[in-house]
Amino acid sequence: MSDVNIAPDYLALMGLENNPALLGGVVAVYYAGCLIGALIGGWIGDRIGRIRTVVVGSAIAVIGAALQCSAQNVAWMICARIITGVGTGHLNAIVPVWSAETSHHKSRGMFIAIEFTLNIFGVVIAYWLGYGMSYTEGGIRWRFPLGFQLLPLVILMVIINWFPESPRWLLRMGRKEEALEILAALRGDGDPDHPEVQREYNDIIEAIEIEHEGEIGYLDMFKKDPLNIARRVHLSVWLQIIQELTGIGVVTVYAPQCFQKAGFSSQTSQLIAGINNITYMLSTIVAILTLDRFGRRFSLFWGAAAQGLSLVLLAVMVHPSMLAQNHSAFGIAGTVFIFLYTAFFGMTWLTVPWLYPVEIYPLKVRAKGGAWSVVGWSIGNALVAEITPPLLAAWDNYTFLFFGLINFAAIPIVWALYPETANRTLEEMDIVFATETPFVWKAEKELRENKTALIEKAKDAKERDQEKHGRSVGVEPGSTTDVEKQNGNGLTDHIENA
Image (cartoon, rainbow, N blue to C red):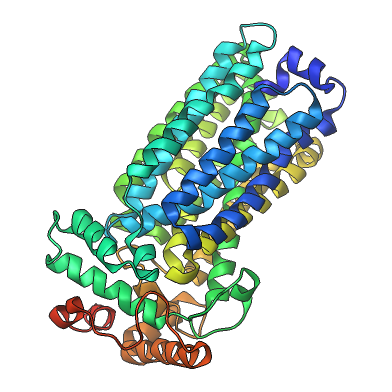
């Protein structure tokens, strides 16, 4: 919306020329829609499946986009923005879940990182489309960029129907043959008897039996239970909030102003901002190559350190006293640190806060967990959007120092509270979070020393819940599948042999 918000025809038609508060409100309601859409998407994702939820989200976003590009007044535009946000919220909540559930545990990070490479590729297209349309006049300047989003949305809505459904969701629904067929295609070159296929199939079934049965609502996820789902909600929500507090929104939105401070013209600043977006996209390739090899925690550690240092040095470079000494040299140095910060973020903190939440939840609430992640993202966006203008007005360059220090503060938080998920199966995370302590170093020690006890604890929780509800979801309690007969005790063996 940055280019739309400066289009004269748009401002005149919407009556926003002298109303900056309402102008910002039109932008902000989109995030409210995302929050609502994520909660709805997480709920229906567990009922109708991951693929159908993507179709629903795409269809809602298509309606919203069509209404945006045809808007005739500000009320119309606000409604259209909310509808688009609702559709996007569905997609934000469910697509990472689907990616995590269909990918192999040793390449899960790579596949979701690829997703975000394509995401930023879309940002690049949108930016340069807006830049090109800035040379036109009239309604086409803002209506065409808003309408252009219809193309990828319609394509997604159609082709997603040929994508495989999550085998984990299918098994939870009791659709065993379909799940085994998809797992065979994904892991065993079509062979359902492949050892990898049998092992994963068996792990999922055992995990379903371990998890609590019965309906679990969003607020129920905060109740204390043996699998510590509430702890996982807090971790996923706060990781998204911290992601926004690392300063990416500030740098992205205010980068052109920083470039102008460096002495570049307004037009040149827009060009540099576009080039920065391209380097941002290219930097995500590093995440594709490193997330699974070095882990989520290490990526967050070094990313926060590099981002924090970049923002601190940016604050120094654009300090008025420094610019007064040599405006050109220090201005260019500040520009370099903006590029570095954006690249470091693309390599690390862009992907992990979206990947991590969908890895840590039990299957039964994984879609709802993805929705809670989007709630955290929406809160973080709203918070940063609210505090940044007054901070810049009061602190100027020290605003970057403030966000830089938050990056450094994030390191001990991640170290203490966020266990590693890389190269662990989704089913194994239930055992990791069965530990009583929230502190990683204690939890990992407890996991190493008491694997069998933790597995039995998780199974006891399952048995108590089955007594309460008198039923199981997807598979019959105590049943033995052909795969189990061939492959031992599934998840139990997998954890004990880890």
